[in-house]
Structure formats: C-alpha cells, structure tokens
Amino acid sequence: MTFERQALLNSAAFLWNKQVQEWEEMFKAMLRFKRRFGHCNVPYKNADRMYRKLGCWVFNQRIMYRKGMLDDMRKLRLDAVEFQWKLRGTPEETSGWQARNKEVQWEQKYMELFRFRMHHGNCDVPRRYSGDTGNLGTWVITLRVQARTDKLQLDRKAALEAIGFTWRLRPRHKRSP
Image 1 (tube, rainbow, N blue to C red):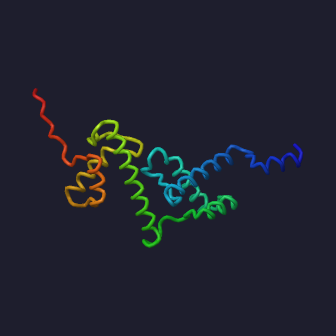
Image 2 (image 1 turned 45 degrees about the vertical axis):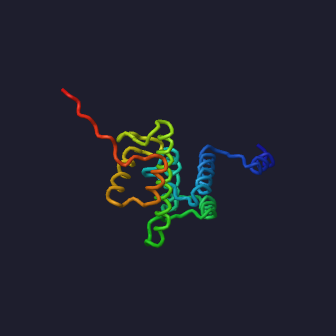
Image 3 (image 1 turned 30 degrees about the vertical axis):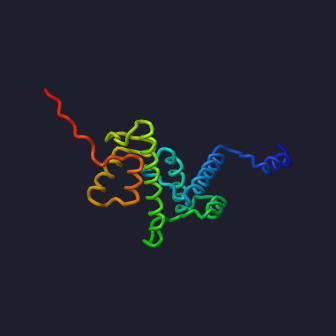
C-alpha cells in the first residue's frame, strides 16, 4: 500500500485493527453515558445490564493507567473529557460522585418499577423478580422496610405513591393440606 493511500485512509479516520475499533466504540459509549449522567464513572459492580460492559471497560482503563500500560493518546483523550482516574480518596473527593451515582441508580430502579407497573397493572413485584437493573424485587422490599423505619426520603415516597406503590402487601392465605 502506498504512503499516500495510507495517509488518505488515516485522514478518513480509518481504523486499522479490531482492538482500536472496540476502544473507539467504548469511548463513544462512555461519552453518551457522560452526556446523560454528567460523569464518566460507569459502575461495573451491580450495574444494570445496559452498562455492565461499559463499566468493565472504564474499570480496565483505570487499571491500565495505574500499571503504566495505557497509551498516551488514549490517556489524553480520557483526560480531555474529565475522566476520573481515582475514585477512592478523601470523602470530599468522592462524596459528590457517590451521591450522584446513588441518585442515578435510584432513578433507574424507579423507572423500571414504573415500567413493571405499566405492564402488570401494579407495583407488587415478586421477591425474586430480576429486570434490567438487577433484582427489582429485593429493591421493592428494601423500600418497604425503609418506609416502615422512616428512612425513606419523603420525595421518593411521594414519587412511589404517585405511581400506585403499595406499602403493605395483601396477606397470603395459608393453603390447606
């Protein structure tokens, strides 16, 4: 291949190998995540299925950076979008991100509960029901416990009541032998 042809392909952003292409695709996905949530800290543990692969990619970028294995150009590109290389630090450094992340997770669960209600006609999620964001049934049980112990924020309680959330389930009848 001539130098001119290679230069022309490079100027057209031609991707020469699959690893480069995959990195570019994940970088673009991370940018979309940042536009939606305002940060690049994609969770990989307990992440919903939609973001699990992206969360692993973000985690791997941090590992490669710490080990000195991340390409300089990639580091510059990540720096340019305010990629956070270190998540653990002083409480002042991490508390804002952690609070935003918990808020995002709550909103995702709430939207999944709303979809469940639209599909099933109620918010009585079975205990073992697992959806897009993980175990929705366990989350619903946790909400009921938080409400019973006055640990659920009032705005969240109001949002749940607005979609018809029931705080007490109907008692189960014992089956006769």
